[in-house]
Amino acid sequence: MRQTVKEAAGSAATVLIAGCGDLGQRVGHLLAGNGRRVLGLRRQPRGMPAGIEPLAIDLAAGVPRLPMFDQVVFCAAPDGGDAVAYRATYEMAWGNLLAALCALPTSPRRLVLVTSTRCYAQNDGSWVDEDSPVTARDAQTASLLRAESLLRESGLPGLVLRPAGLYGADEGPLLRSLRDGRARCASGPPRWGNRMHRDDAARAIVHLLGLADPAPLYLGVDSEPTDHAVLLQELAKWIGVPAPESADLPAAGVNRRCRNTRLLTSGFRLLYPTWREGYRALLGGSQSAGQGLGGCPRGADQ
Ligand SMILES: NC(=O)c1ccc[n+]([C@@H]2O[C@H](COP(=O)([O-])OP(=O)(O)OC[C@H]3O[C@@H](n4cnc5c(N)ncnc54)[C@H](OP(=O)(O)O)[C@@H]3O)[C@@H](O)[C@H]2O)c1
Image (cartoon, rainbow, N blue to C red; front, side):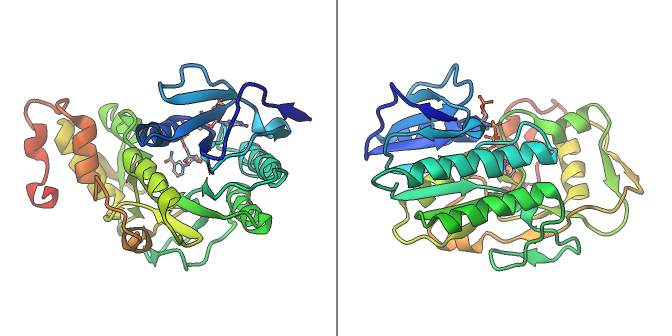
């Protein structure tokens, strides 16, 4: 099925954000603030913020007929965590968008495909970067890797950003699990994980859109991989709830430390270099009176 975009008169100077949800809208907001024309594509684009023109298309339903764009960001998220949802997003929706862009007389100058650090299956706490091996350890990861292959095969001038654990939109599952007492710390050796504040992920995408000669792949992580138990214990102090109990939890599916050297070397500067600055901004004044920001380890907040 081909869909026609009637009112979305794109132009050579327009940026298309496909899958314009939380992250996409943060990107769109920054670009619009820089004077760019931004189209935000999603299935139900109601309530798009000022500066982002809504475009209602289901990319998984077929190859849309699109106008020309200067730059394109694909940051659609699967509807669920299962293999079918991942295939619909990273193979069908992304594949249809690529087909639509390839059919245009003039290609976009730059595409950014957002996938995930889920591509890395290392579970021994080792460091990984853009040159580390990836593994299709399940159907979902296979779909992410297929999306990256589709971009390479398209010949379009694109790059991939693989972010880790995005946070910063609202309390999120980590803080909720602490507040309702469900959180547990794994006993035993550290289980390393990585995060990036959503504002930094959006800023990284805008940065990558503007780079003169980007690499084909970047990790989107902050500068401090953290043992999950340490993160839980510190955040519990900050919000004034009891430290989570230790438990013999099942082996971690992933346990690795992602490096952001390539992104930083390209000139990107993090607003939130570690989870400390990010969660401090997220929690704002909402810490318990007893702990407040005084519970935050000062030395790491400089
Ligand atoms: N959350 C994390 O920790 C994390 C970590 C690594 C990477 N990521 C990646 O970061 C990206 C952005 O995440 P996010 O938090 O911004 O997700 P989000 O808020 O759910 O936004 C994604 C948007 O994609 C749209 N969408 C989904 N299927 C579509 C389709 N077939 N056609 C058109 N639009 C479609 C949805 O809008 P409609 O329902 O209106 O279509 C939704 O608003 C995703 O690629 C995600 O996988 C997230």
